[in-house]
Image (cartoon, rainbow, N blue to C red):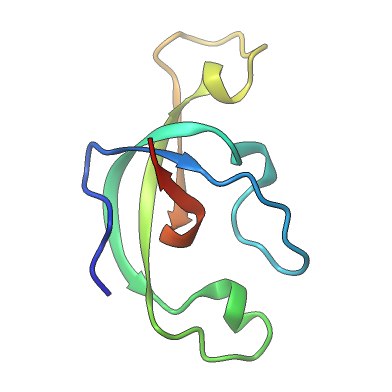
Length: 94
């Protein structure tokens, strides 16, 4: 599968609350960040959790978020970030 996003692209994490095993942290849903790297393509862990094969492989990205945008009460430095690895089906272009 070809990666939809490139390093430097701004992306928003889908706001969704599907039942079952989900690898994307709840606190990051609806937040916007920047693709820091493409990590490769891997079987979808949300499918693997149910004994399915997880195929086709899904692109995985490391996305960087400003901590103050994730946690409004964050008291650290303005430039602090948090990086989270997120599968492509959770991401939307900005």
